[in-house]
Length: 203
Image (cartoon, rainbow, N blue to C red; front, side, top):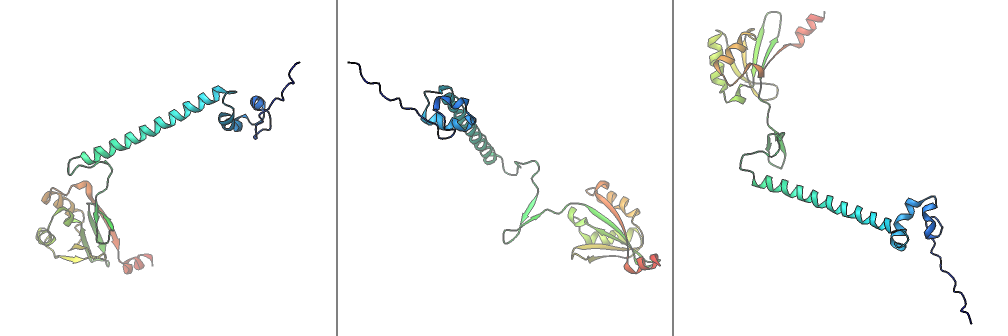
């Protein structure tokens, strides 16, 4: 007596609702792939192979990134004292309370201030950034140009040298010759007028 045929169990995909072996002909095969890899790997062995290769590449990339970061940390810790790891690292100064202050830009500013039609003052800022004592520089400038020169506090409470008279152009050459550390390329020249003078010019 022949055996009764047994019912065939069909595995349906919950994504596309087709039998698993027909998923590749369905509308959302890409969405079906994760489910097929987990539940029907025998039907699509190439999907399992692709998944393993992608996983291997991912792990390899992670290992490479970890190796690179470790090497960077090692090179930073082994760097000799005083060397800088980053070429663009800015000079900073840590203040009380954890605040960080950037190092002040080293430049000398020559400012010509016209207070009325005749009176003019030449202001020199930034010489102290080059280790120059302002009181000594003030005496030299006064003697050189036969005029009054004094060290005063500017609007930002930083000390500057006020020299009587318009010597803004002559003083640049004198500064570069007297103090070689101050190069011509880092000296900037400005001209400003008092509010009263500006009012008179606009009348």
